[in-house]
Image 1 (cartoon, rainbow, N blue to C red):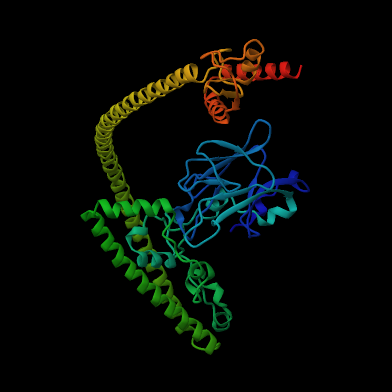
Image 2 (cartoon, rainbow, N blue to C red):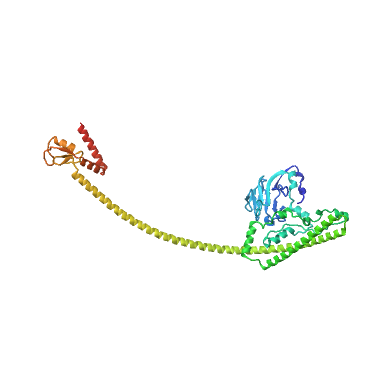
Length: 488
């Protein structure tokens, strides 16, 4: 990481600035300069270049854009990135502008497998310039300015090449992070004492790191985001690698084995150089110079192999892109055929459903006809029962009118009384009749005795209960009137 001191401006000293603070790190903060558009990605034409060492394709070439709107408010836009931009844990729609505020959480890409957080997570802050500028990440133009004399092609670190070789061709879709190779810097030696005083860090740090670093050993190389894995699974299912890709992969494997051998030889030479320096501080300097020269030769040879490997990887990437386009065409055709099959299946299901509905309709109509017949039969039976009931009631009325009516008042017997001649009358009626004549109104025999008939009274009362309410009310009124007359 370059020195951020070159970014300091005179008019910013003592002021406050907006930036994206890298979560969990006091470095690689992204400065948001007023009036400037800030672009972030892994490409060369962006403001801040982010190259992931775990999965290089996690960040797109031009991942997102941050700029101020007309009101001076900072905004963020997802520039059609593969793995997306997340604002406060919600994914942004591509090419849509969203306002950001102090304290907002911004995430670039998605967490890899078995990890809770993404590699690039930031928090929007506003701090004093003196506080943030030591932690700022160098801009992409500063990195390019420092590396003008170096190779422009992207190189691959040995650990990443080794990881790619172990994983196989399915992970070549993840590009390897850029590593500059400097074969033209020999290790100088000006005498015995000077050689003995060289510390190990004067050698190439990429070559002298015998102990595994935390970045290369602590984090397993993940196959990449979910989209890349699904695409490669589709490739493996639908198509086989063409002959050109297979030959390129064979060359890639051979080169990988050569690179690993060179790496092993280089490490052995480095160990030998360090052992000689530690054991003999006043030893033979020519032997040390010779071993360092061999180490430089191995380093140059390794850089040449890396350049060839880079060309092969680019060729493989081109081949994979062509295969991907071919796969997309096949998927489109397959999708149309699947849609036709689904439509035909849906039509068949619709026809089967209509046939089942017609059968159900016929069965329902048959059930309705049977129920109608049952209702008609029940109605006829009910009418017969009603007619029989009416006939019985009519017969009862005839019996009551003919046999249970008093001949004097033409009403049903009230407190029926039977004379010695066996004729019956109302008690009130016969008493009134006897005031004029003491003979039976029917047979004209002399009245010698009167007997109260409880049987007739009970029978008449029960029969009247089944008659209409008018008959009941008239009988009650008549009973009250006769009682009143008798008392008076």
